[in-house]
Structures are given as structure tokens and as C-alpha cells.
Image (spheres, rainbow, N blue to C red):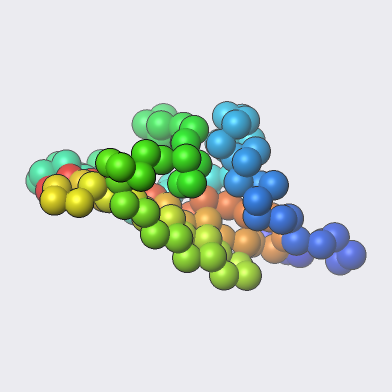
Length: 112
């Protein structure tokens, strides 16, 4: 993906809001085959456009009484992790700025 001269990079907060509220936009901003997987016990399932479950809840909207969260936000990436303390459940999503647009490039969800 090439950065278009004169076009500023997309602002992450605007992208993030639209990503979670517009399903067609969300699917257009996921690079399939998506890196990462869904893991439950010994079963590992690769993410495809056919089995992707739309992301609706923003990381700052999760129930903090149930989930612990961690965010890393740099100029060209945003990574969100959530987990349930005392269990083996965790979820991680990584967004990257490619050219001047943001994309979801990695997703992990699992419970061992």
C-alpha cells in the first residue's frame, strides 16, 4: 500500500470508531488471511472472512469488573489486549497504519 502524496494519515480514533460501527468498513480494513488464530484447548482455528465475528465493543467499553485491559498506542500501531484474571482466556488485536490507512493485521482469542 502506497501513501498518497499530500494525503495525511488517517486519524486512529476516527478509524477505530468507524471500524466498530460499520460492518462493511470493518471487513474492508482486515487483511485476510489474518495473522493469529482462535484457540480453545487443543483446537486452533485460522481467521477467515467467513468465520470472522465482527468487533462491536471498543476496548474502552469493556466491563472493567470482569476484564483486565492493556493498550499500546504508537504512531503506526495500536494493540489492545484483554483477559479475565484467574482464567486462561485472553484476546489481542493489533492495528497498523499501512500507507495512510489503518488495518487490523492480527487477532488472537483463546482459552487454554
